[in-house]
Amino acid sequence: MDYAGIVRAFGAALLLLAAAMSAPFLVALSTGEPGADAYIFGAAITAFAGVALSYSTMERRSTTDLRGSIIVILLWWIIGPAFASIPFMLQGAPTINAYFEAVSALTTTGGWLSPEAVWQNASGMIWRAVLQWMGGLASISIAAAIFIRPAFIGIDTLLPPFSRGDRDSYLHAIREAVGAFVGVYLLLTLICFICLMIADAPVLDGLVMALSMIASGGMIPNEKSVLGYAFPVVGVLLPFMVLGGANFILLTRSVLGVSSRNRDTETGIYLAAIFIVGVIFWIAAGAGDLDLIPAQIFNAASLFSTNGVLIGEGPTLPLALVTVIIGGSAVSAAGGFKILRWLVIIRRAREEIRLLVVPRGVFRKPTVANELGVWVHFLVFTLILASMTLIIALAGHEFELSVTTAISVLANAGPVIAVADGGSDFSVFSGPLKLILCLGMILGRLEAVVALAIFNAAFWRS
Image (tube, rainbow, N blue to C red):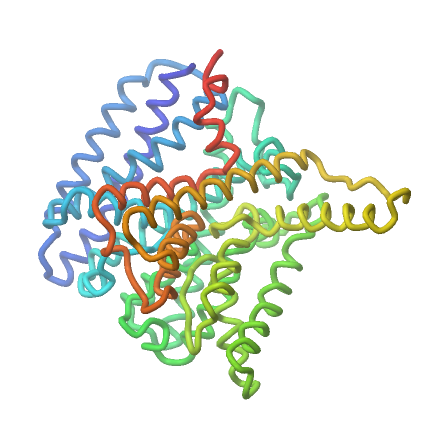
């Protein structure tokens, strides 16, 4: 295994993380609030570690195989938040709480221990939003470079607008993905911010929401959520939430004007599902005036994209949780099971029903590559979800809260926990349970087949 390439890649990631700490430092400096020194000190520690790791392997040329790239991804999701949490710890947060906040931000889960405390601290809001933005970019880049291969996702999707190289250059593919996506990702964020400024959102709040929404982080820096702003803000957030849950390969190709030879069967269904589920929410809420439908379409888009932000009369808990589990498109910042996989499952169910009705019928064979991967992913996703629900319930929490929490962390949709009976946040959980929830967030950012491979000794053998 190429340990030099692994160490060098993670060192480069830490340098990017250290550079990102300049944003909350400048905000703290400009607002005069305490904590600026915490970000400087955190950046110094992170940069020192990044330089040390990068410099120690500078002279070694190497290529990183699949196992090495998986290790780098695990380091990013597990060790990266430890460095990102340094400013929180220096400002007095307990170690586990600080780590939980960093994991929640970097995985774009957006579940906080104390939302009120987050809103009162400008630099803390920006740091969480920046982490979400970086986590969203990392998610789509890793997905496009590695996870959309049929062996992991179980089905072919749109070809990425970059070269993924051969089997010995997986980290090269990730670098190519970041380079291909970052321009469009930044452009969409900038457009969202400008539109929010036009909609009369406060500058700081607009920046936080722009960084978070494109990453499907669901961070609204107002105690009244979206309804705490002028109505046009809702209209601005809706399309960008939809974009956050859309296939970023398609978005990038569209912006760059590059056509694709692969047929896109997912986006149309994704958009139609948002509208149909929005109408279902409206009917379940008692129907009423037609002018109430837009709010429910907003809720449907928010849940599909796993932002989890709700307005008006929110949907019932079962409807909300099912929508979050469905998730957004493949290669998007959204969590969940992904619509593309559900299409395969529905198609297979249709074929089996046909055979039940006409046992001797001859039907066209479905052209789905590696369909077994979809079912393996479904099985692993279900087992992890059931295990997390059981662990939380055994810790003494109500079953409804246990199910909601398990789904919110595994689908990376933290704000959904507020839909549980009476509403809640993650501060109700004990320290050890918070670490388990962190594991759930990280598993939510890994393809379930990859998560299964991690615990398979054969995968790590030569």
